[in-house]
Amino acid sequence: MGIETSCDETSVAIVQDGRRVLSNNTASSLRLHQKYGGVIPEIAFRAQLETISQVCRSALKDAAVRPQDLKLICVTCGPGLAGSLLVGVSFAKALSFSLGLPLLEVDHLHGHIYSGLLNRVPVKNPYVALVVSGGHTSLFFVRDYKRIDLLGSTLDDACGEAFDKVAKILGLGYPGGPLIEKLAQKGNPKRIKFSCSGTKSPLDFSFSGIKTAVLYYYSKLRAPSSELKSDIAASFQEAVINTLVHKSFLACRLKKTNCLVIGGGVVANSRLREKFQQQGERENIALYFPEKRFCTDNAAMVAGLGYRLLKTGRADG
Ligand code: KG4
Ligand code: ZN
Image 1 (cartoon, rainbow, N blue to C red):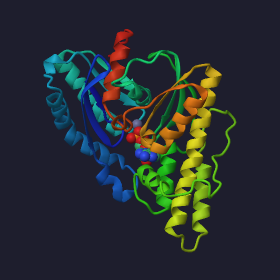
Image 2: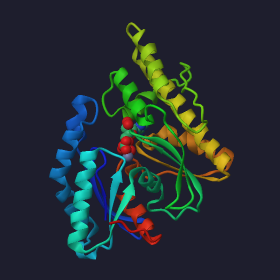
Image 3: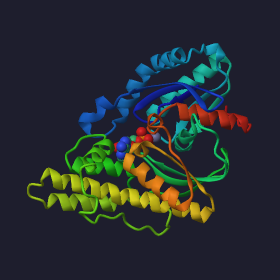
């Protein structure tokens, strides 16, 4: 069983042999945060406290698994909101104690990497992994499940956060990623030259400059047409994706690997998938994307990775 409560989702999943997802049930408090334009931690963890037992029961029922059939409890230990993590970890500890089962803690970002490997044949180590979510943008070198080195990360805003902020500037709503993607589909990505700021280390990221560039550009307009708004969304999205593609493939070259695994909420973006796929074909690098349902926060990735860690002999208190 995997349990994930690092942000606004409460997710419980049952996974067999670290790979086959038998159930993955997620309740989200997103609706309660929408009017604030971002997640409010106190609202998130109160909702999680109220829903976690029910989500757990449904996950067992959907997988047709009884509590006594479980072999291991895995739980996200961070990074995330303190109150939210505490709900998941307390629940997991109580369950593991009452059922007499081992308990393993899983890093949320490592979980996102693993989401690309669910329901798939295993990938050969080592490989480069990119995690692009609402809270993080990081490149990793995965030697094996236990040894995951950080190659670079964002120096300011996370990639999904930049999508959310630009959506707010354009008056689109929250969460912004899917709304920007939809608007960008009608737009011309070449109309405005936006670009992401450079970073001293080539594998780090910076998205706050491009967000500010969109803000300045947009606030100077008198009455932007819907066509121009689409072009802004498309030009912004294209610049961000180009940077992600460029740095991820650079990491593959530097680390001499021909395998790239990508995870996180932003990977739900179809244009991103398309551009990574094209570059992968050009450079002969195999790509692993999660199924769309495993891009955003979910417990299946936690259960899957926890199982692998157990196999390497890890044990937590
Ligand atoms: O991984 P996730 O569910 O939560 C974190 O761990 O942060 O990612 C949520 C982020 C949000 O910022 C959201 O705007 C972004 O993923 N996102 C997208 C798309 N769908 C979700 N960004 C771009 N295009 C999308 N289609
Ligand atoms: Zn996440």
